[in-house]
Length: 445
Image (cartoon, rainbow, N blue to C red; front, side):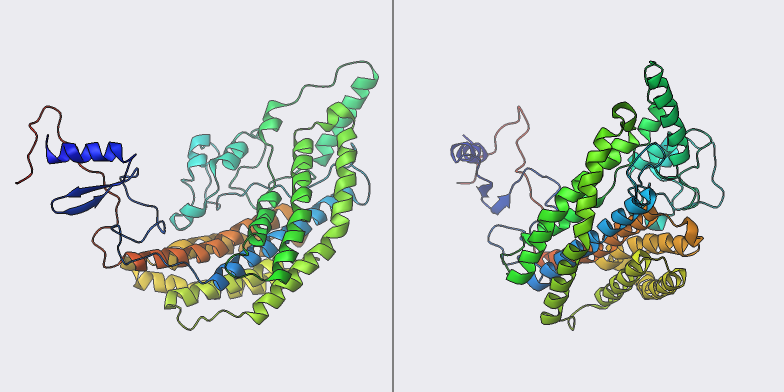
């Protein structure tokens, strides 16, 4: 029996052990021949000294707390969209609620082709290369492509895409016809398949889950006051965000036509109660996060140049987000914040141009999302304030999250790269099996 065959026998008897001792050393094996994911492991060989460093627990906790707070602010947008669309009344055929559901569109092109195929739109071929990574998924684009020819395309202006409340007159007409038909003994009209395909979800539950994650981050750097505030808010906000999602689907699927708004009234009661408690709940989170950050400032003295530039982009992005979310809408302040954000991104763009070969993680993970976010806010700042829909601001929260999360991911990637330097090989390798039918090679005696 060859040495290699005996080694394979040892593998089997050891229950799937992951190392084969060869004459020249140890070779690691694994299920992923392409190697570990970035940040999964910094050790090239078993027992290697290089280890992937984790970010400072203070940095991680601050990031998660901020993600919770900025995402939770979106619930205020849902509250504004819902209450303003109803005007203090209950949902009815004359007043359909708005939940801030808007498609996250591709950046507009100069000369959109109305005859473009749905597959081309889904591929995002019309989007600039700088924002390819942050282009929306094919799902909302495909939904936009499914609209009738008279509906605006996905590349139309930010104010051109109607939402649930904007469609209220048409829906009201349909509801009135349905009521008349029902009273006359006729069955309600069938649902429009094209309308069903245009159902758009709301992202509030995804935003609020960041609070649940942040509340569970108590192992490395416990802080009872902050941890309790985050958990209390998560316990309150997750059910509320789920109710918003269910109610949004109920109205977009036009289920109110078949139950005479029975379920809509139930949702209205839950949402009114939840929105009534929202401001106080958000205030507790805001105060606890602010107090924690003031008592635990992050030392940035050792940050690299690109990391400092990225931090400045995140700070300007945050200021722009808060300006865009303020009610009433102040177009002047939004324009001012957009100018500051553009000025913060410019040095990072310049750094990227002069360090093209370095594959800097902050350039790769922050620059493009920041440009997409800037373009979105710039479009809003140039829109007639009367036509700035809540859903567009909700989309700004989504784009902001990409900038904020990209900055945090860049740090993890940088630490993983540093751990891998100087090692022999950063890939998990499989032992090369002998060719079937070939003679076995005996190990030297």
